[in-house]
Amino acid sequence: MQNCIKLLSLSVKCNARAISTTAPVAGKRNFRKFNVYSKRGTRVVKEAQRTMANPPVPIQKRGVRDTGITINGQYVEIPEKIPEIIVPDLTGCKLKPYVSYKAPEVVQSEFTSLDLFNAVYSEKIMADYKAGKLEADGSSKEPSENEQLTPEVALMRARKTGSDIF
Image 1 (tube, helix red, strand yellow):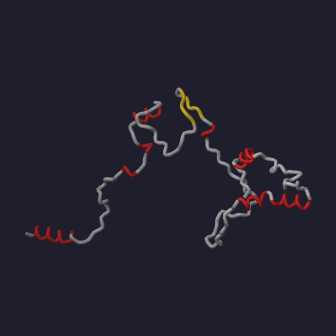
Image 2 (tube, rainbow, N blue to C red; image 1 turned 90 degrees about the vertical axis):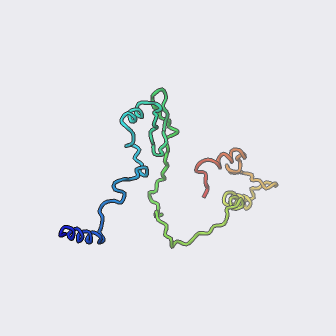
Image 3 (cartoon, rainbow, N blue to C red; image 1 turned 90 degrees about the horizontal axis):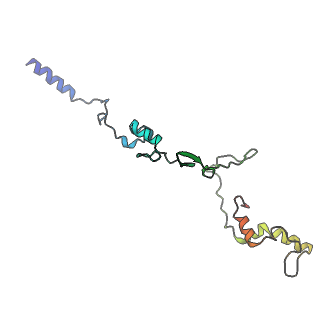
């Protein structure tokens, strides 16, 4: 009878709240969420990935593209596939890399063909008019390099990289 009383008092004490230090899943984890590409596969599979041209389990490259191709077991680097990063020289630049949220918002109207004409040709036309260097049809007697361009050459120059005026 005394043993029963001890068990009863022990069971009453166990019903109290307690902190558990073990995980509720008892050690079972869903490893599909964790991308461990280089750790998956047996040694045989990894050896096949290293040696075979087309392994049964492809090598996970994590989104990185190849910069060459494999021809007859030899990897040939293609210079056009290597990304070229062009970084301007910013020595002496007074701008800072941070733009404050308190900066005033800039509202700019649409850049029209008239604005482009005024930015490129208007000064030359006004100077020619004041100097009397215009023909009867309005063309210049001494045309500049830009005025002598054919439409095809002008289009080609406009589509060149870095040809932005502004």
